[in-house]
Image (cartoon, rainbow, N blue to C red; front, side, top):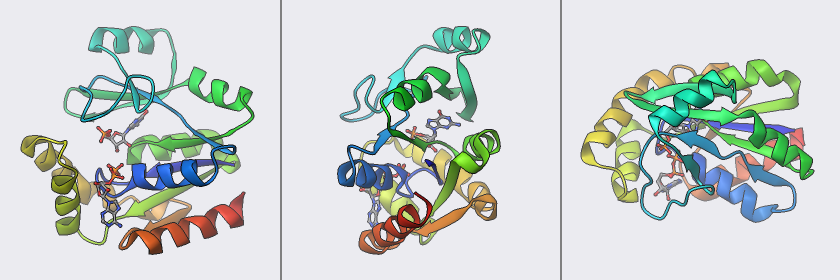
Length: 184
Ligand code: ADP
Ligand code: 5GP
């Protein structure tokens, strides 16, 4: 089973993915996407993302290297590489995706029954703001752009196989562990 994690930025996708990776390093691996945004905080090329230029991203689009890609924010591109999925499957592991809502719906359409799509729901937009501000690695301007997009992204929730309410971490991990147990 492949797991696709989607949510407005700051809802806890990375936290959920990292929980699964920490609990079951032998089972799961994160699909590392390409992005044209700058690295944040402690992010490392090849671990969180492949950080590439817009020209390189366009070359890879022309080369059909992406399963899907989106301009998630104005001028910022993010895309999933065919070769990432192949690399993880060759290693005998299950792929985890952390992608935006549109990319997740797109991937689910391509993968069908092979994948479970999971929407991580923040308790409120106010709490989302607190989490983005608390993470301390995103500029105030980018936080506003992310919050402006969050309301629209929330309206896609029903299109996902499962929803995890990320109010407290303990509650969210419990829901996630139950989903994995049920669908694995
Ligand atoms: P995303 O990957 O969706 O952008 P993150 O996983 O980076 O979101 O989470 C955003 C911030 O909120 C991080 O600082 C994270 O530690 C924090 N966070 C995640 N889940 C919770 C929670 N249940 N309660 C409080 N803070 C949380
Ligand atoms: P961030 O800049 O916070 O790392 O990510 C911004 C958004 O882009 C998040 O919703 C993240 O899930 C999404 N994203 C990351 N990689 C991809 C990808 O390969 N494809 C798509 N469609 N979205 C992605």
